[in-house]
Image (cartoon, rainbow, N blue to C red; front, side):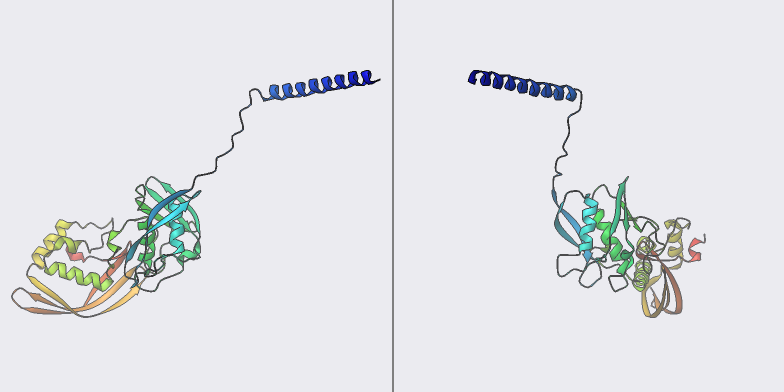
Length: 295
């Protein structure tokens, strides 16, 4: 009886072994020719230092802030925008982008970065004449710290706005502006003062740079220089007495009273001289006189 039991047990074990071998062989045959299953690796975390630009304590210009950031799935552009929305870490700086702003998309193509914000981006976060320029250039200058980014197009829910808040247009992409870093952009009356000072000092090239010159306006420096050399070469100084200003979207109209002193000491007094200025990518420029175009 015991002998038969051992024979039965041995046969059972042999049958089970054969079954296991057949199943293993079947699995092996089915696996031949199939590509291996690739398990995606965990993305590596990138730690780097970026340069951000925030509003100065007095609200006149932008100030650099270096910040260490971490990113895994974000692009560098997305990480920079995220940190701008988070605001400055330094207590002596002010935020430039409303904290409730959302970034819908960021796309960089051929040196241009397209940033699509939510409608909250239009909400004024700052008070002052330079609010729009500081907001726009904090974004543009921060992104153009990336060598591959040369210009930035800002969109709001997919649209290019004709007027951002009060004066700036977002119809065209912006390029980097270093003049707004550590130095305030001049106000409309400040531009007029600089313009008159450059004329009195015969720095006609710098005066020409204050002129609004859209692409369809045919005024080159040689025409401007000839006009100034004939009509303004004997002026030694200007003195602005008073002025009034009327602002509308994208434009400023000034009525200025000033004295013009000639080299021989003669003083000519001018009253209610109108200067029209246009906002050109955040900077005020003087609309040129028609007389500049005369031969």
